[in-house]
Length: 167
Image (cartoon, rainbow, N blue to C red):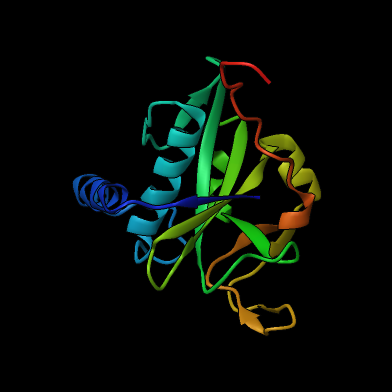
């Protein structure tokens, strides 16, 4: 897990993108988390030194070939490895190769945690399907939409670009 600071310009850029693009049809929170979602995309793109596409099927291209979709949830604190990452059931049609998962501090939106990734095929091999209204976990969380979940502990660390200079 990689903790990153979210700048005021990141938040401003995310709000502008959310306003420009408007409502997305594959939103578990019915677009109430749109700014946090775009912040997640922005911090991953910055960490990897990539441009953000903000398309329907993927958000960035890693290594010139891997189409990655970034999925972000808001959180009240540092994410636990037992927390779950979700893909809304309708998003299974996305034409991406990887899912990258991020959590953003919901109170201040000043920190984000890049949790890791899974290739799309592997994600669905490991995922548990949950129906809207299901009650899950020790915290008795009510599932907001049909989705596929995988615990953070099942994710792979995001491969980072090599830095120049001497080791």
